[in-house]
Length: 181
Length: 230
Image (cartoon, rainbow over the protein chains, first blue to last red):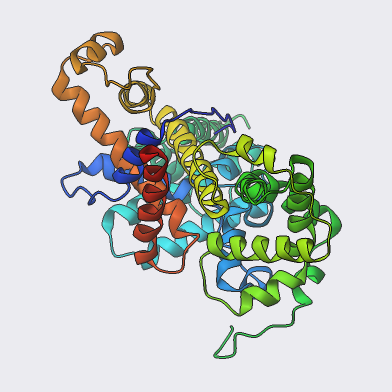
């Protein structure tokens, strides 16, 4: 996602109407794929959880501030995963965060979405660093990446990443299977 | 980690930051919180140049400095009210030091809706919040193949019209290439649901309890309705 800000001029009535939307009760009849898409973006729009003394020593009002300040909190996961400048150690941190979080959630939808972030991190390692940061085979990964690109709730940016990673895996499998190599 | 005693050495925060980190944090704080702080000071009577200097000084000296950490440790308040209290105290100290430059004629230029400094601060805070949320929503819609959804939402709710009248939905359907009004309403509800979620996520980070999110929204609604009532 690029940082493209677009100032929207609103009247006081429009601002009031929008804020009232914020008070409405959450809808319960949401389609499953919509719900997963929402969950995915909720995760992708946040940075890695902050850790360490830099945040833990802050009092409550400023802890929230630190999570909103990019210079402290870092870039959101979607940028981490789709940017070639992201270090391999950060990508591994995203993978571990998704894996760890997925083990402790009660919601199946959320677990499935976190699994997609886990595989997206592996994809990112392959595409931007040429490194496989998992013990999963290339065959397994190619199948997983393909399956994820077919999810209608998958983010466009991740679909592109997963597609590239899938091709990387196919290339690796092609080389391994080549008797002349 | 932590424990019952929440005290911490006030020097830890500054020791953990190097100069380049401080610069980056300051630049971000200026972007995010400059307008509400500036509006508060201008509506309090400080002239344009002085208000700018004070905001810069406040963010540099007080927010990054350990001074504000000590003050924050005594309160469990929300970030918005915490910064307001801090800037108010900062301005009072400036006033007491005799360095205040009051230009009453310039106060009216700041806000056409309120002469109350706290209202001006809250309004600017809410304005920034709504812009951040709408920006994130727009990017998300584009990233999810929902450009048509965003366009419809924008035309229905966000377009500023001189007559303040909402367009006819069937006209919008024609304009946006939507099959029928039922589908259009469903698409708008879809985006409104997402707006609600993103707005509440933005607010939740800045308050201490879930219940405070609703309180913040009610407060901002009251502020904007005050402006409408005038």
